[in-house]
Image (cartoon, rainbow, N blue to C red; front, side, top):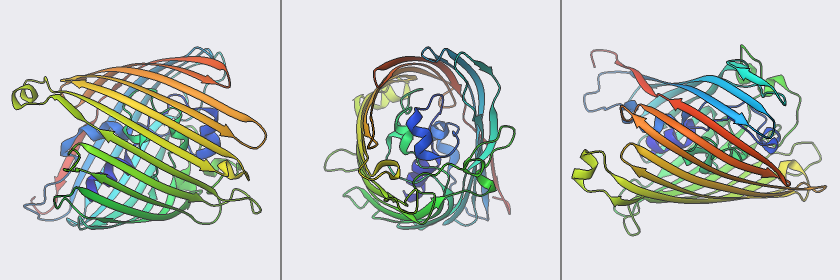
Length: 395
């Protein structure tokens, strides 16, 4: 369970078709390709029953998307490629390297970008040791704080919650899991990290990343840390119910500034409406998944007394190869000098071909920031493929 939870929580990331202005100040890192698509591939994981030596899996997720922003009068057509490689050196020791080609330059107002502004860069590079109870992880990773940026499925659902997708961090995480002994799976994680400002944070083709900027944000200097507790497979409530709470403390942005602290709480619950065996086999499995996440920042962005709150409900319907999802995010921010309020209402219709590989998505979002409205329209196609599963020594 630890390997699966860390994979979906750490390596999966959001599509960055459109980012709010607050996101740039918070993360100080480039946009990342959409690794959420890999969650649909069950064979990304090795079977160690007949272990004969190191096993390597390589997955790629080509993606083509078009985004129309009516407020800025921009059009972006971009091709993305997410690449994830896993090498199980032993059944308990794994190395993970995630690379991606993605849009890293934002269009100016009234500009159209067609396959222009993409950059190749490193997203994650870490080792993971896990015996399914205790786990140790070290390297460059995405901090496991919050869940909405990872679990919301739509084209624009994660536009605002990407503010707290803290990727490009270097450090270590330790985890302790109960395994499923009848009372569900309970996992505690604790980690220490800082922003990666090395050459590994840069992109080529189009340059970006912390190594390309002198911006100062929370987490830049000194040690930051995170603690999360997650529970899933809770048989006393429902096997498909899960929740997570977390706390993060990021180092001060300036030598005389305060640390940025935040708490998060979320849940997700998949409820089958028609989940019998015949319906599942005939691709008529029908389910609804409500979710909710709340995040509060104190001394937001390293400003004494500043704060920000995020409220994100979501609702997804799955019927066979069809999926319809709705999501909303309300944010209230106070940086000590001005209030920043934003709302995002989004919906996406998806259809999966050759399940579970290729997914076509049509998305729409209404975003309003400090009373200024904006409409986002997008189409994207994802095709995650497990291209290599190779075992040495005759596996």
